[in-house]
Length: 121
Image (cartoon, rainbow, N blue to C red):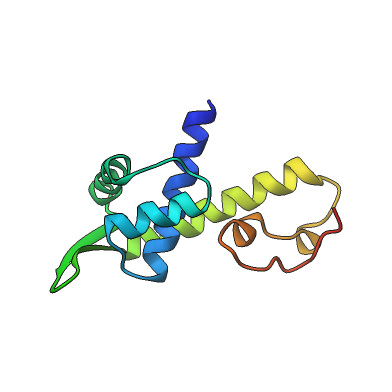
């Protein structure tokens, strides 16, 4: 179960990174490692292939850089949907009695963004 959850979370991170900047496999692996994932290029490639086959990523060859991955419009829609589901789960787990407007966004925190509401934990 933990492995499946981490795999799903890695998908969301990769889509977020690919939306921010077209990135090579090495860049994406490095970004995932910065967030604590134990990956290397060999473990990231199958994830990128799967996301491409689902229509969420596309790759293009760039002179001097090599193959870079970027988010498609379908990927943007999936990322937005995934972030909504993550936020809903966070709200349910951490404070079911607080209204949606009062809760910080977990997906914003996961992606290095400052939540709308600070928490005192």
